Image (cartoon, rainbow, N blue to C red; front, side):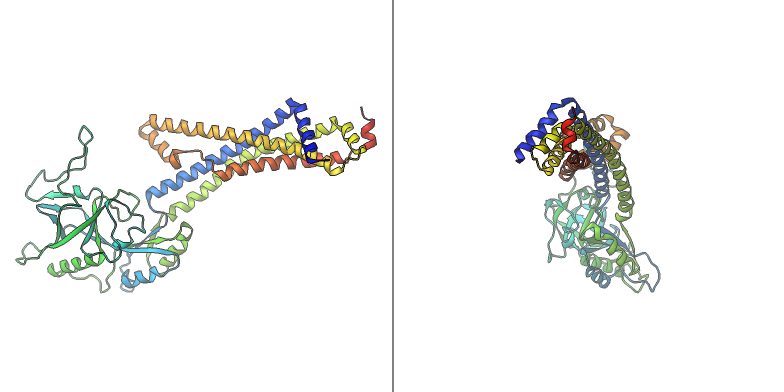
Length: 450
């Protein structure tokens, strides 16, 4: 029997009993729709979790802290940083040295900076995901007097000639226009001066600085780039040493050590391994892995529960397919007997029944998948509308719940193709027992049956 004949006979039998076929296909539609929508919600929640964590901080960055006061404790110095840089899976690394505006003074004419100043490896900022709104990030070999402004650092300058009302705040007026700051980072000239003791009669020559860019806002970065200025850490150490000398500041420890450092790992999967290796060196660490891991386990449990609920619906649909095919055998016993008498190969009879059951699973899967996309779109639209209209706490909940592009239900390609393949396989497996039963029907008994 040709494949065209078997297909024609199989689909002819399905459409001959339209109501029964429709009801069986409906069961598959409901099952497929249930499992796809349930899993899409689980994927959406997981994506939401990842987006939330990314907003809180880079998932591949480890913050290393030098908190031990013991004289025997390892120092977080340049030698130790070189050792960490050689660790497997470490993509980039930078120390973080904080300089208070009371130690050094960055000025432009009569305007003095009052924010935080951080010394870092400027050429690694690109590896850590920092971006600029204006200008560009420094590359390796940049002049040590190079600086970068945070997004709102230009508003942290005060007019030193005024005793009050000497600062401009980054708040829009009633028309939504932001006020002009005292300084323009990319155009004005800046200089740095080490602060002297109040009773000192010495003079310190100001040193010129050159701003090459303004960093974009990013609350997940450490150091936080908003109200701060970044400079080369080597130059920052020079200024700190000069301040300590001029102000007679004595060292509290013989070992020079940075307060902290940031380590960039090549992938999320390798963060635990690198973090463990750093802790073994005697340092305390912090990363988003401490939050991500328990949340990911919780999301995996939720996905399994949601997928299981959808799987139950598809299992019920599989029983419906099996029932339909068994009933079809009883009704077509005489037809099966005639086919055997006419010399039809047994495997062709089995193939016909498997085509019928597989077609039920495939058609139900296609329609169920289409309805899943429609339901997913409706859910996302409803959540987006609720988030826009809710405001306040409701709006925050909606914003925090929605995943990529504000979607709470996400159907990736692999889920769509997997659902279609799974529903077809369910149909085929459900029809396997009835198909085997059909080929075992006795030809003589079948012909005699009315």
